[in-house]
Amino acid sequence: MNVWMIDIDSEELSLAQKLVKSNVNTPSSSQMIVAEVLDVSDAKSLQLLAEQVLSKGTCHILFNNAAVGLGGGALDTDLDTLHKVMNINTFGPIYGCQAFIPGMKTSNEPGIIINTGSKQGITMPPGNLAYNLSKAALKTYTEGLEHELMKKRVEGNGKLRAVLLIPGWTNTSIMLKAERQKALDKGETYKDEDCFFYEDKPNAGAWMPQQVLDYMIEQVDQHDSFYVLCPDNEVDTETDKLRITWTAQDITENRPPLSRWHPDYKEKFAAYMEEAKKK
Image (cartoon, rainbow, N blue to C red; front, top):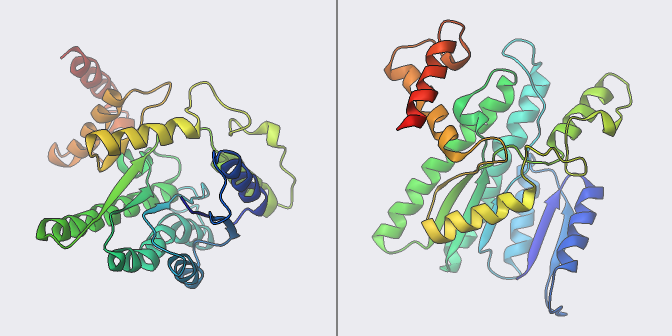
């Protein structure tokens, strides 16, 4: 397998490239494990990358995973930050899809597009509306993309499929980098050890990235899943499903939005969870 890795963080990208190379069992002079520093919010850069990759062969797996954890509430997130979050978290994957999928279709070979969403883009917990917004939009885009690809498969002239990866709590550097950026914006220096969790300071409640990938491969391979809803060490899949159902029923039950966190519905939500888990 040839691997092309991109990231805006050159230091972490270099480490990732070395990790991939170290896991190659039978090195080949023809195998490419390429790492390029690139900003996914730049559509032209992704288009040039796609042309470069596809000139060397076929892309069978497109994994749009880049994200940023900046942002805040509806009125306290400045427009520059909101645009940055949307441009990376939402438009980054869209640019990736638009750059790569036409060439993947032309190859007429099986392929898969994986977009990394978030539970926050489904249940919308208060605290970072900008991030929730970006992931909710990506969920909608990926659902629509898979529907279109499904129609092509049914018609017999399509071999591509899309997947929405929905990780649980995962030990990544997304919070660490967000806190670093906040400190930088204030002209301050951030101490990494002050961060609640990240990959080199894992929290016991969170999964490691490899666990997420292993789970995703199992769900896609064995269960043909589009929604890969990952548990973690604190929240199981059944709990996630109940929370998602409650959120959707805010509309059908005419409850206030985000009623799970509304003081008038706190006890009702707790009772709902308790009763549902008895069944």
